[in-house]
Amino acid sequence: KSHLAIVQKVNNEGEGDPFYEVLGLVTLEDVIEEIIKSEILDESDLYTDNSNRKKVAPNKNKRDFSAFKHESESKVKVSPQLLLAAHRFLATEVTLFSQSQISDKVLLRILRHPDVIQEIKFNESDKRSPHHYVYQRGKPVDYFVLILQGRVEVEAGNENMKFETGPFSFYGVMALNAPTLEFRSPSHLSGLNRTASLSGADRTESLSVSGSNSQLNNSIPSQQYTPDFYVRALTDLQFVKV
Image: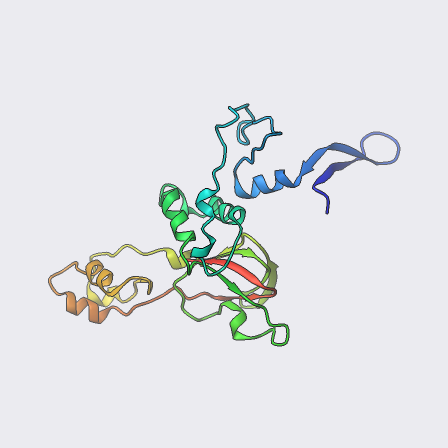
């Protein structure tokens, strides 16, 4: 329960018994900074940049949490700090949410949408309840998930190998990848992996590549990403669902 830890390594060089050599200290703040890929600054910091280790002006990287305090907009309550951590993690670790693909403001608006942050209440009396499954093998989906709090069990592969993961693990990136429509005959267009997130108008517009829209619309079934794994909640769960 301490916020400080001593970092040691075993020194077995030379003669004599091996001994622990102290390398330094690591704080809980250091760990959180590495997770969110951003510097946490307060009045006691020396204000050094986490990337190049150079000193910066005291107010240069000051964080404004005011935009994260509208908890009433979300059905599931999360702290402003957790929302910021999710925002920075998505922007730096998931390519589809990087600044080259989507602006920080738009990403923040997505995270603050009432239906994006969801939760699962774990039922101890029915651990295999269908309600506990975030993904099911062979069941098409059109959403991406980032775990915020809680633990999940992942079952994958032909051998049904299982492992547990926790916060800031994510799944379903391929569900967000909309393939580029190519100029092919209708017989080849049936293989397109379109997601159900497109509205009817969007589908019609995206398929308008020839003078016969009705023929294309009738020949192209709506397809979704089909996972080949299970993701099941093992505890109460909070997660981002896009």
